[in-house]
Amino acid sequence: MRIVAITACPTGIAHTYMAAEQLEKAAESLGIDIKVETQGAMGIENTLSLDEILQADCVVVVSDIALEKAERFSNSTIIYLAMEDVLTDAETALKTQLPQ
Image 1 (cartoon, rainbow, N blue to C red):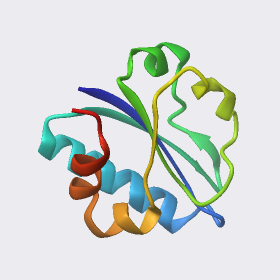
Image 2 (tube, helix red, strand yellow; image 1 turned 120 degrees about the vertical axis):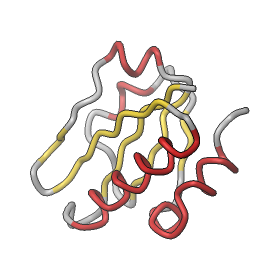
Image 3 (tube, helix red, strand yellow; image 1 turned 30 degrees about the vertical axis):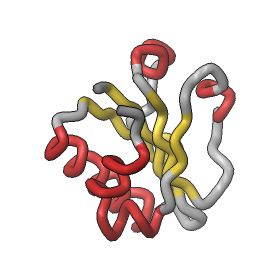
C-alpha cells in the first residue's frame, strides 16, 4: 500500500512534526510506503507532487486547521485522523482506518 499524508496544527511547530514522525514510524512497521507533507510554521515542507498524490491509495490528513492547497486532494480517498490518536498510537490509528 502507498499513502501520502499531511500534518498540520494551529501553531505549526511541535505537533505537526511529531505527527509526521509518528506516521512514518508506524507506516514502516506496517510495511506501508508513505510520504508526509508538513504544513507548519515554516510553510509547506516535503511538498507532495501531483504524481505522488495520484499514485497513492489514499491521503491521510492529520490536521486541526484548514490545509493549504487542499484542492490537490479533491479526487483522492481521504482518511482523517485525530492528532491525538496519531501522537498516542499512530500504528493503531492507521491499522483501523486505512482501507484493506
